[in-house]
Each structure stands twice: as C-alpha cells, then as structure tokens.
Image 1 (cartoon, rainbow, N blue to C red):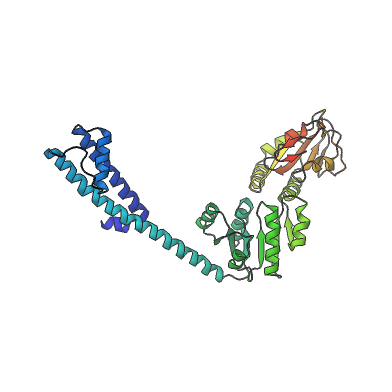
Image 2 (cartoon, rainbow, N blue to C red):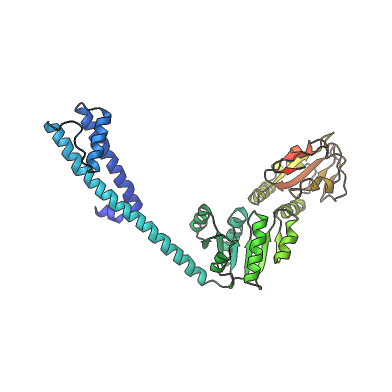
Length: 356
C-alpha cells in the first residue's frame, strides 16, 4: 500500500483498474465453471462488485458458489473503494497541477521585461522559439491550441494559452513591457488584427509580422507592423544566392548543402522543385513575371536553364521569356502542384485552392 501511495495518481489508477479487471475475469470464470452461462456469470459479478444487491441470478447453494461469491465480495468491493478514491485523487491532482502551473506561468511572465512575444507555435514559431532559446533571449509564446501549448511547455518554453487576436491574452503576455512582438500565424487576417491590437496597446513596441500573400504586406505595414516577413520571398532570395550550377536537378537532389537547405524550406512550409516548360504549355512564350503572377505569390522562379544544356540564368528578370524545354527552379508554398501549372494549356488551371 505504501508503494501505491508513493506512485503517481495516474499510475495508481492504472494499477487499480488492472486489479479490478483481473477480479472480474476470475470471478466470471469461476461461475462459468459451476455451469453458469457467460451472461449470467458476468451479470452476477457486476451486481456483486458494484454492491447493487438485486439478488442472485441462480441460487447460491453449494460451498463452491459460497466461496466464489465471498471472494468476489471481498476483492471486488475493496477494489471499487480503492478505485473511487484513486480516481478522486487523480482528478484532484490534475486540477491542482493545472492551477499551480497556470499561476507559475503568470508569475514567470510577470518577471519578464524587454522580452519577445511569439504569437503562434506553428512551423515558424517553433523555429523562432528554438533560436531565441539558443541565444538565451527572454520570450513568451502565445498559442491557443491545446496540443501545441503542451508541446511548447514540454520543450521548457514559457507558453501562455490564449487567442492572440484578443487583447486580454496580449496583456497577460506582458505586451506593455515587451520589446518585440512577432506574429507568425499562417493566417494573414489574424496577423493584421494582432498587429492592430498590439500597436494600440504598446505604441513603442517593435512588431514583426508574417505575411502569406504579397498583397498583405501593405496591409500589415498600414496596421502598424515595423517589418513584414514573406516566407516565400525569403526562400526564393536565399535559394537564388545558393544555386550557381549548370545541372539543376542533379545539384538539388545530390548536394548535401542543398538537402539541408530543403529541410529549412520545408520547416517554412515551402518546397523547391525543378519543372520543365513543355512544348504547347501556357508557360512557353510567357515572361517570368507573367508566369509568377498566375500563382498570386504562391511560387517564384529563382533560376532558368535554357533547353539543350545552354545558358543558366540565376535570378531571372521579370521580362525574361520562357522557351520550350527550358527548366525552371521554382520555390513555392507546399501543396502547390507546379507540374500541373507548367503542363497546362492556355486555359486557366485549378491547382489546390488557386486558379492559374
């Protein structure tokens, strides 16, 4: 009993449940051994264990049945008492832990000053928190999802559960004392709203906002953001600096450096792909700017290889015309079917949620 008391409430609960299952199984088997059916045996055991007292299913007249019933009463009723007490203990412990944990988080946030507030613990939020933790910069994460809050706290990060679009959680996160707010949700409308709220709560705050569509950048700046980060643009610019090679496909799949960088892109929700402008597709004869405009910011061309192993053009200008058989290195958001766009006829093509 001392070992059970020393164990965690949840382990105690699992042990008692296991004990009760064994008692029920053994008692049911004992009644069936006396010639009872399974239905009658399990019914009798449950009536006895839960002390309902509706009466015996069959007369208890033999010494064997007396022994089985007495054993079921003693072990089953004792087990139910223990199960009830351990269940109450476990629920109470969980509530106390949540209460103390919530108070501890609020106390720790109350001690922060000149810290960073990260709104959202998705792919970019995880990467940002990791970098800040490595540099020992104080920060607090504001996330509304239960699973992601649990993940952040398991990593040892200071995380407050709440909706960043509401002013209350922002105030609890210490926005009045914060130095920087980074809103990195994959929702442009939410990022705009958070930016507006944060700017009104702290006019001196530096706000860095994430934008998915290029058209959102001006809205975020108008709402009060100091800087706007477009992950797709960042990926395109960085990859263009790294790709200086003639055999595009072989380099992208074979270079260890590029494989590491592809992993970084995937963490940002981006992908790099090599596609061919087939003869007869809508891409042939179109300029780079026209081709990119079909994606509404979903992808960008960072390199063009002329057909036949000819010229390799990094950072192609918008007026460069795509020829038949040309290979394009494209960086875009995950889930965009670039091959469908490249092989499409002149008519508009549906790719994911976008029409090209």
